[in-house]
Image (tube, rainbow over all chains, first blue to last red; front, side, top):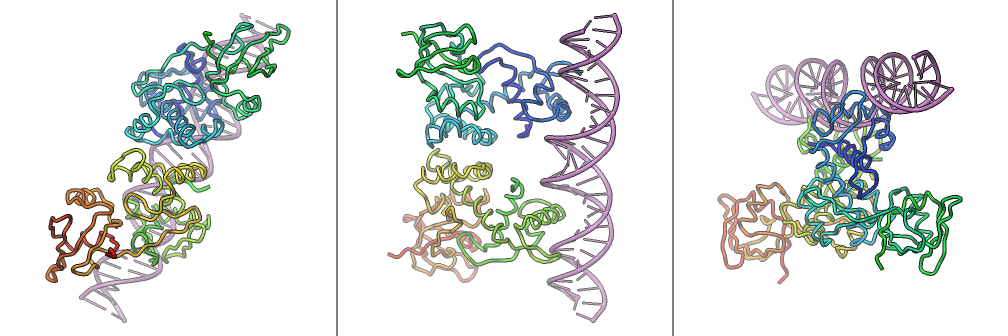
Length: 225
Length: 225
DNA sequence: TTAATTTTTTAGGCAACACTAACTATTATA
DNA sequence: TATAATAGTTAGTGTTGCCTAAAAAATTAA
């Protein structure tokens, strides 16, 4: 039996070990990186790592990096799947808004019932992506793939569509809401300023300028027009 | 902040202090009764009682009975409300069956989000009773009332309709399922046997004999025909 | 009304998870 | 390469929520 806390550690490891959502490249994770992500002290995390290793959910040698075992990854992906299905449910069936769904899904993701997850999945029509545009692993842990880049990687003159955000902080989501940017928003890159790496864009005839930081955190699919 | 465990204690006190679902009469509850209901040891419960008293959720004097404070009752009813709304959701929207809904709702009832509860309530059309026929407290803690008696209190020759069960054990529910008795099943009382207090009934032209124990655990509304 | 039984409380332990403080290993840098 | 900075570990603590064993109070029965 995996505890709620352990589930959160596994989920964190899934997030931290992939460089960006939907990207299959793997990164090694250290104790303090994990600690800071979970807003815990390294000593706390270090203790939990022992337990997770004991349960064969992670590989970890003293002073070395952490990787998930097959079992750890499978279990972590199950939580990610549930999180994203619940977010989709809240957004599409209960009219929660984009910003609120995350924290409620943080709780719902820990509900233990295979059947419930599958029923929700069916109710939603087996979606591949959640309202933030992040891929929903299927019941076998397979993650739907998609060609994505950050908005900063899009060429001048190209048209693209927002698929996901890599920063899900309230501040960032609020900022996007002010600009009326959400999933599926179409963006045309008007110009890229070399000086400060900012970027000029157009959304529905309105022009804006986005900083490099913002453009880095927007994942888009280039629109084949 | 009330912990998940504390919520379960409050809910248990709500159940134990009302003699039967939907009945407003109150009963005092002792430490070991609570302990046996929660499948915990008295010492464990005793310790928790201190914490609940500290938080002003119960009244409790050494060696005396336990009663809920206003705040304790309000909070407990919130859990009962959530439990029954989730049961209704699982039953009517996700086609879970009557027997399965309870244990999943035991988890879902602890999700903390006012908004979620209200959205679910709306989605369900503000139901007054759950699939077991138990009343759903409204958001102010008011419990829909209804005239109910146990099947054993129904007079010979009278027709009634099943509204709720007071025993929700798997065994009992399975037994009812075998007899094809569920919520809204119409029952005619053919005869009452004085000898062993059993009762002869008719359901859709089929006759059965029910023991006193079973008849005591079936709450019915007498049908005004 | 005393004795037996049951209920409640106390005392002492344990596991999961969190913390601080102090120490050690690794990595980066001057 | 020596040393400073960073990362990781250990030791000792606290809280929650559970346990067992044993004592004390209340209730029931002889």
